[in-house]
Image (cartoon, rainbow, N blue to C red; front, top):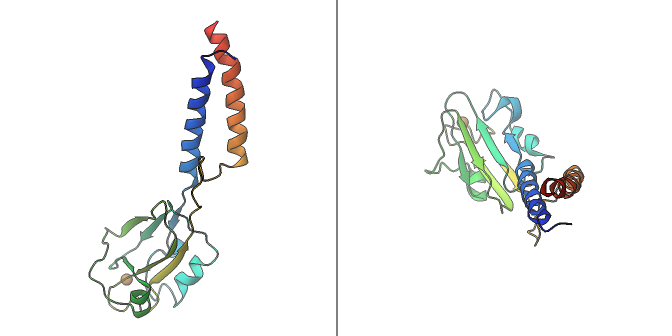
Length: 165
Ligand SMILES: [Cu+2]
């Protein structure tokens, strides 16, 4: 292997690591096609059912989309249980992105503080699990990415010496 090959291989590894990290984040439209809404569009427990079985991870984005008058408040467990009309609400023009911090872990609670929407079921509790950080690039790249990495390393190892000759 020529001396000029190594930096190219390092570059390929770095690029793939970035691609792997970007691909790992998921965007969730809260409530699916019904969006972020209140009765009569939803029944009590609708968001609990919607969230059941989904795995939320740090770096994912929660997309709240709605029609009409609603808002989003990121609240504590107690405020969620009591539907407390907190003053710090996140307002958006019928759309709001809530990016979960990369190292997010544990329970996150959201409610709408308009009228009695929260009491009627416009409330969301999710469990966020982030992979424990490791020394090497975490977010375990898929086997496809590893395969692609091997191919690129092999290609660059054989092409670069040819170019340098
Ligand atoms: Cu509302």
